[in-house]
Length: 170
Ligand code: S3P
Image 1 (cartoon, rainbow, N blue to C red):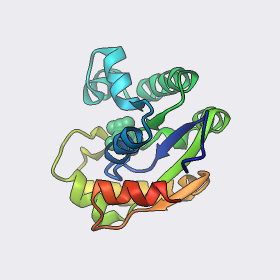
Image 2 (image 1 turned 45 degrees about the horizontal axis):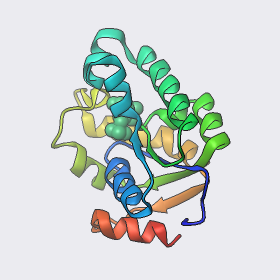
Image 3 (image 1 turned 180 degrees about the vertical axis):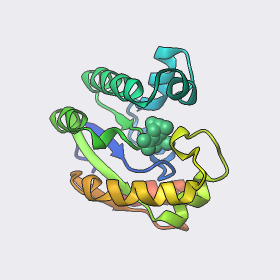
């Protein structure tokens, strides 16, 4: 992992998998820039992700996501954390493959649910049965996430630091 010079390291995976937390710790240790695509989308739109979904819809958000990813990947190589849906679009997978190494943070439903249930910021989980929605997204997405260059299996008890150190050793 430490040998990935001159390319981005792009973290993919479900909401709650730890992409932002592990990504920023990884960047700190490798002394490279860290960029979170959701944060960039919010800054460019001057709106939260929830507001974008509510006002303009998911399709609009997905187009912004692709634009922002292209811009990030054009910049100085670093660690990039993506939104959970980013890898589901072929154009995004192609962009990421051309500029970086993709790593899927693989995490089980219970761990994800434990983390995301406390926060209500994910518009896709504003359903009558958010845990069922999360499970359905897992079923749909995991076969596609599996095409990432590397898979990193999260351990439920891992701290961010422990997970980052294990990832660095891969
Ligand atoms: C989404 C995940 C979110 C955000 C948006 C859609 C998804 O990002 O991009 O709410 O489709 O799974 P995180 O994975 O960082 O929570």
